[in-house]
Every structure is written in C-alpha cells, then in structure tokens.
Image (cartoon, rainbow, N blue to C red; front, side, top):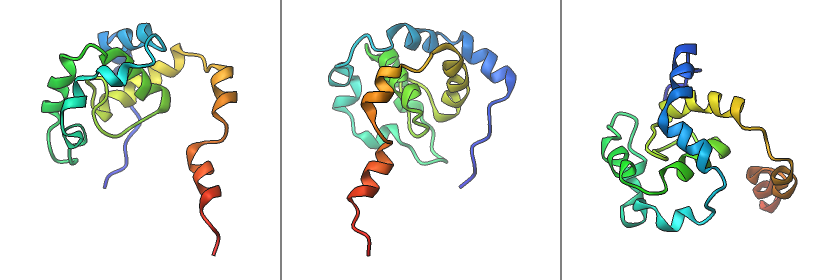
Length: 130
C-alpha cells in the first residue's frame, strides 16, 4: 500500500473553491440526524469503500443525488476520515479539502472537552494486558 502524499498548493487552492466544500462549511452541525436520511442507507456499504485499484464512480454518483451530502462531507472532514467516499468526495479530494477545512473551521472547545480521549485510547483501556 502506498502512503498518501500531502496535497499540493494548487490542489488546496482548488479545494477552497469547490462547491462541495462550501456546502459542507455551510451545513456543518446544521443537521445532527443526517445519517438516517442518506441515500447510502439503501446501498451496500462496500460500494463506498472500493479497493484502491477500483473506481469510486458508483459511490460518487449516488452521493450527488443525496440531500445530506454537505453534512456527510462536513462530518468526514471534522473527524479526518481518509477512507472511502464521503459527501461525494474521494480520499484524494478530501486530503486537499482537509487543509482548506482546517484553515476555515476553528475547533469547538466544547466538543473537545465532551469527547474525552480519542477512541483508540478509550479502546486500549478495555483491552486486558497479558
């Protein structure tokens, strides 16, 4: 597996103008129940996580017709998810958007306080040591 590269400056500049990112910024935290209304609810999840050598065209096409595309993309950028198709974007597209997102969105101090330690750290506390 290859390591993902950092997006180039022209890719970040294009991402800043991308209408999908602008919509995600607008719909951020606007709809907490977006997952229940997503078009993806009626589709096999494997569609949205194609193998690296397979095209993601089917998933992206489904996302284009979805009403919650902005909220979905906002969630993926908020948590930094770099796998699969979210909000009609591929992981490569989201890497450039993530740079633009982080410069536009200031972290919510209340959300950080409520979240506690990262999920990985919480799971490690549940694993018994041998």
